[in-house]
Image (cartoon, rainbow, N blue to C red; front, side, top):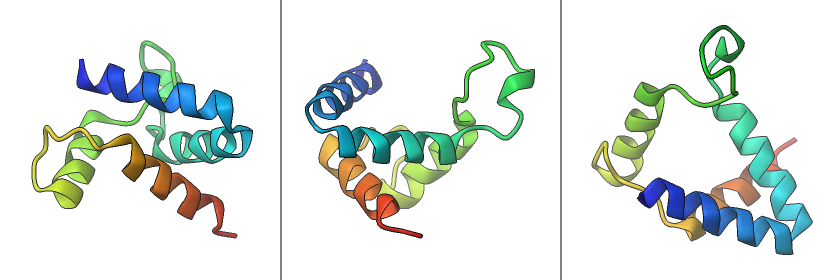
Length: 82
């Protein structure tokens, strides 16, 4: 449920700020599983093991859900990269 809440919060903020929407889409595309088109549900979603590893390295727990502000800060940082 926490991931759904995060997704809804980010969607709402992206609707209000189109530049943020572009940055969030860029991050989502970078996190996708390499062969996403070969696996059901055929969506560019990240691998579960990768997300768990990222949450562990960032927050010290594999089951952590990042705050929306952290995701936005990361997305803006990615958006500034060449």
